[in-house]
Image (cartoon, rainbow, N blue to C red; front, side):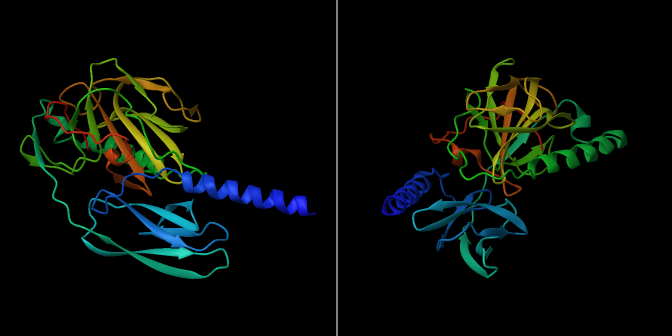
Length: 287
């Protein structure tokens, strides 16, 4: 019996050590960033919600950490998360979102339909949006989640996340990912382990792959020339997903890489070990 108790204590200690060692993204509590909110207490993993979406929760030291994606539309100020414990008790915790001003980018797109789609295009865009939204809402249960990524393709970061964009002088939604300029045909590799949840060819995004890394963390790879995986495939860090292309709305060969956390697009740079520098605006864009 004493041996069994000792073994149990050892297993609990090892579990706590693994939880404490779990890497986290860099915190940036701004619109388009990531907030890390500590939740004290033990027991089973609490359910945490922000803006009606389930939030990633990881074991850390003597409690839990909620890893929260903050939308670009979030207003600066105090924000609230809802914490539901295993016993049914409900509590709230607060965190502060700071203001951030993003730069402006002007792009010229030769294909005018990519700026002002016709009626047939709009029908397709509606279908695309539903499929893309469903893929980004994927939530696979996981006790550990890879939160330190490698760059999916080598090359300069030519359009950074959050840019306020104008196509042919007309305002459009802010840039929802990171553009990495690379020659057409360059292999795009998974930045971390996960499972392919969807692939498709979309009006704006072109050939696209979605990878679910667990607990609402989904990455998206757009404008591919070719797709080399299919839904249901398990991938490791470095697994080829496809190749860089110019499909969809682009002004040059590049990869558009997005990171979605609790159904919210956030800055991919926060998940990279290096701090990326933003280059020029020669790579092109999408919605």
